[in-house]
Each structure stands twice: as structure tokens, then as C-alpha cells.
Amino acid sequence: MHSFVRKLAIAIVSVGLAGTAFADTPAKPEAKKEAPAKAAPKSLYDRLGGKDAITAVVKDFVGNVVADKRINKFFAKADGAKLTDHLVNQVCQATGGPCKYTGKDMKTAHKGMGIKEADFNALVEDLVKSLDKFKVPKAEKDELLGALGGMKGDIVEADAKMDVKTAPPATKK
Ligand code: HEM
Image 1 (cartoon, rainbow, N blue to C red):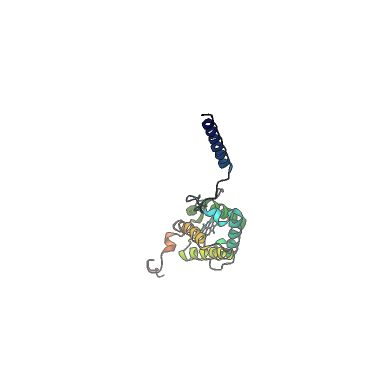
Image 2: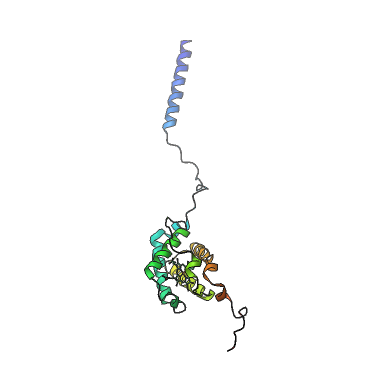
């Protein structure tokens, strides 16, 4: 009887110790785990590299626009520094960044300028040049251009959009 109790006690203690020892053993590395399925998707703002990267691209882009003979007449009286600032904040905000765009809405800002689709496309080309220069990857480039493309309807004016086929015949003097 005594020996049974002793054996039982030893058994309990050793199980206890084994348990403790087990609990203290660092978990064995498990078979390679998949990356967490729901990693928070990074905003386009972050993927572009944040405000400094956006500022560098926008500055270069404004430089391209000012040098672009196809469209620089539009910007003859523009305040380059202010425009750059507005554009940086606009892009930053539109891509999920922490900035606040405080300029005019796109329709008001471009009203009466007579911007044609070709002008819009020229400006987009100038932006693409900068995005390529700064090696912005295709996915981010496409996403940004998609967002800006959505503004086209507010920037290109209806009359200016008419091409030769749809414009009314020019009246002769
Ligand atoms: C997606 C395309 C475009 C975006 C995102 C954009 C954005 C802006 C912004 C944020 C401003 C400043 C508004 C303010 O001062 O409150 C602005 C002004 C202006 N934009 Fe655009 N714009 C676009 C296309 C164009 C095009 C195609 C032209 C002409 C070819 C143009 C010509 C101008 C001019 C002349 C100003 C006034 C600049 C000044 O007086 O300082 N924009 N634009």
C-alpha cells in the first residue's frame, strides 16, 4: 500500500515536472506558416512612398508642364509654387494620405480655360514621364492615372471636347 502511494506520488510529481518542463520549452517552430491572409492593404499613398516621394514627382511634373510647348500657355500666369503645393495635397489626399486639399474643386479650378482632350492627354503624358523617371511601378502608376482620369470630365470642357466631326460647321464671314 505504502509503495503504491509512493509510486503514485512519484508519478504525479514527474507528470507535474514534465508538464512544467514542457510548458517552459519554447514552442517548436511549426511547419512554415502562410503569410497572414488579411494583412492590411497598403494605401496607394504608402506604396507611392509617402509625401516626400509624391512631392518629388509633382515638382518634376510641374517642370515638365511648364516646358511643354503644347500646353504651357495655359500656365503663363500660374503660381508654380502654389500649384505644386495644391497638387501634392490633392494627390496625397486622393491616394489615402494624411493631407487635406484646400484648393478649388476641379470643375471650378478649370472653368473657362477651354481645355481640350488633347491638352489633358498632353498633361497626362508629362505626368507619366515623371512617374517613369522616378520608377513608380506599373500598378501604382495605373492606379494613380486611373484616379486622375476620373477628373477628366470636370476639366475638359464640353465645347472644347467637340471634334471636327461633331462641331457645328464654321460660319463663313
Ligand atoms: C487630372 C488632371 C489635372 C489635375 C489633377 C489638375 C489639378 C489642378 C489643381 C489642384 C489646381 C489648383 C486649383 C486651385 O488653385 O485651387 C489646378 C489649377 C490649374 N490647372 Fe489643372 N489639373 C489637371 C489638368 C489640367 C490641364 C489638362 C490643364 C491645361 C492644359 C490645367 C491647367 C490648370 C491651370 C492653368 C490652373 C491654374 C494655375 C494657377 O493659376 O496657379 N489643368 N489644376
